Every structure is written in C-alpha cells, then in structure tokens.
Length: 141
Length: 112
Image (cartoon, rainbow over all chains, first blue to last red; front, side):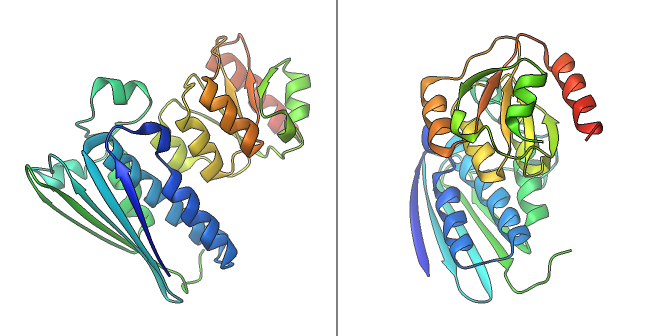
C-alpha cells in the first residue's frame, strides 16, 4: 500500500493529518496497538518538523506485511549539524513555534526511540530527508 | 472513572466535546510541550495544559487521550472546539492553576 501526502511549511492547522490517516489504515489492518502508537509518535513528530522548519515537503508511506516505511523529503534550510540536532533539548525552532509548545528539542529523539530504523540526511540550503522504518511482525513488550 | 466523574468532582466547565463525557480516564499528564505529551502520555490520560490551539487536539486524538483540561480560565480556539466536537474528546476548563488542578486530579486517580 502506498500513500503520499504533501506538507506545507508553517501550516500548523493541518499538522498531524497524514499521521491521523496512517493511524486509521493501520487500525483497519489490525496492526498491534503498541506498534501503531510507535508509528504515530514518530510520524507526527516528523510531520511537525516539516511544518515547523521546512518550506514544503512530501511524505511517502509504504505499508506491506513486514513493515511500514515513512519517507519524509523536504525543501528547506537543511540541518548543518545532525548529531547536534539529535540531542535532546536542542532546537532551532522560532519563538512563535515554541510558544505553541513545539520546539522543545524532543522531536528527533522521540522519532528515533520509536523507530526500528532511522536514517537522516540533509543538505544545507536544500532540504532534509528522513526515513523511518517500523517492523510490523515484531512482538511488542 | 469517566470524564463526567472528573467534571463533577473538580467542578470543571465542559468547553467542547460533550459527547465524549463517557470516555474512560485512567491517568493524568501535565505539560505544555506537545512533544512531551506525544512521547510520554498514556492513552486514556487527562491532559492538563494551557495550550489552546488546534494542535492539542491532533495530539489528543493521535494519543487517544481521555480529555483535555485547560487551566487558569484559558479557552480553546474555534478550530480546536470544532475538532474536539468531531473527535468527541472533551475539553474542560478550570480557573485553577496547573499545579492545583493536577494535585486534585492526582488524588482522585489515586483513590480509584
């Protein structure tokens, strides 16, 4: 199954829409509730990152019997120092975004801790690519 | 307990999502950081916050929270109310601070 979603930078009113739709699909597929939770947390954080930091982005979601792959590709400022961005508490979010309760430097660490595989690459001035994989046949604790 | 029990016991105002008053509440979480709630709140939690914008509903819906409690007289924005009604996840209001209402809610949940 393949789904594609467009995300517009700054459009907080629609942030979470793609995550919500993927959640519905996984529920219909009777995926383990704990796995759905992990997918939803990772996907929502990544979606919000595109809205908060990029100009626009695309999310490609592929679901098969083995796994769900969520690929985020954005046009944006990119991330100059990925290890720094991965540190809990580090954020470059604007004051407005922070006032909304985002930009606490928890997003990327939250994504990583909920993903089975997590790949991030970025080119400054061009954009960021993030791939999150969650395996669907692994029994959850 | 259900949301309606909390409304009654803590004298909360139902600001939206009244159709969800029968939802189960099994825990509580107090935070104004959406990623914190996203990462660490449990399904069925009553979420105490001062954030009023629509994204709180996205988080509440994705995490299947029991209810949202807005502190210090804060009121939800119109599109937040709309989504709360649609999703049937109640938003409740109190004049109390997050500290005070959290303490009361904690005691209530401990007595379960």
